[in-house]
Amino acid sequence: QVQLVESGGGLVQAGGSLRLSCVASGSIFSIAAMGWYRQAPGNERELVATITSGGSTNYADSVKGRFTIARGNAKNTVYLQMNSLKPEDTAVYYCNAGGINGYTRWGQGTQVTVSS
Image (cartoon, rainbow, N blue to C red; front, top):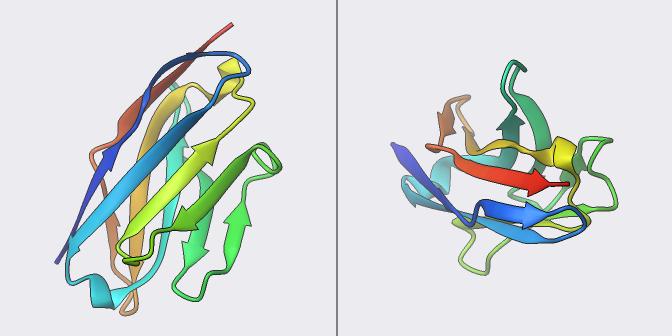
């Protein structure tokens, strides 16, 4: 089993920055990729960014050039650096881990609020 714990959300003004962190514990050797998703009120959960165990990254078009996903040296931590934040980035951000055998795990979510 893999458990995920996020941190780093909060309230920031438009144009500001935040960094989210996600720490995985448990069977971390089985993780193939980690990523961040977000869900705003009334909307479906959507992909923000992902990173594979090999370091390949993928971003939603809406965050390209503003957000950066990276893994920590210990490989069980993933970060999301968010710059030039916009009010439309306001959402609950969820950490995700995908396993080599196809499982999916979610963190509890962290609120990001961007004021105009």
